Amino acid sequence: MRAAMPPRRKRNIRSRSRSAARLAAVQALYQQEMEKTPLPALLHEFHHHRLGATIEGVEYADAEVDFFDDVVAGVDARRDELDGLIASRLPEDWPLHRLDRPLRQILRAGTYELAARIDVATGSIISEYVDVAKAFYARKEAGFVNAVLDAVGKDLRG
Image (cartoon, rainbow, N blue to C red; front, side):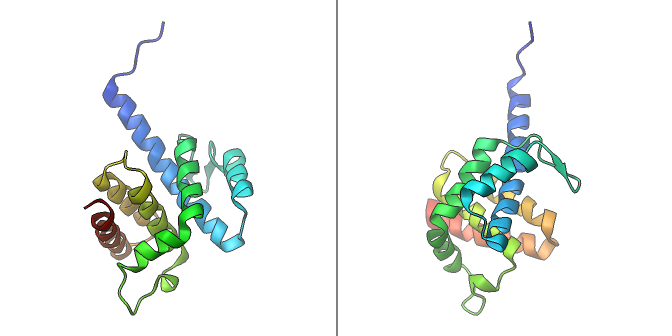
């Protein structure tokens, strides 16, 4: 008989699997924007060729697939709404379309979670997407993600 995993260890595994799902979601959303990949084909590709694999040194083996699907499908379905929320927090002289594509996807995914995933704490969402930003960018962009998501979080969650 296998012993039950201590609750703290279960949380750590879930946290890591959601972190991996967030990173994969941002990459999937980037691919969707670049290649105009339809959502079903995009999810199929990630389920069968990316999640559960190590690609270019990034391990997706522990990504929570349902969470990944929710973020990617949620951003796809609510893109205009999310873009409006983000744009309202950007400087007037720096519209959303001027942001780098990966940065846009990070903000969209984070804003989706703030809008739709009330089961996840605001601080956790912001912190996770700041970490995703650090995987792609230097400190300045991570700070930008923090500031925008913090403002959007206040708009959405008070």
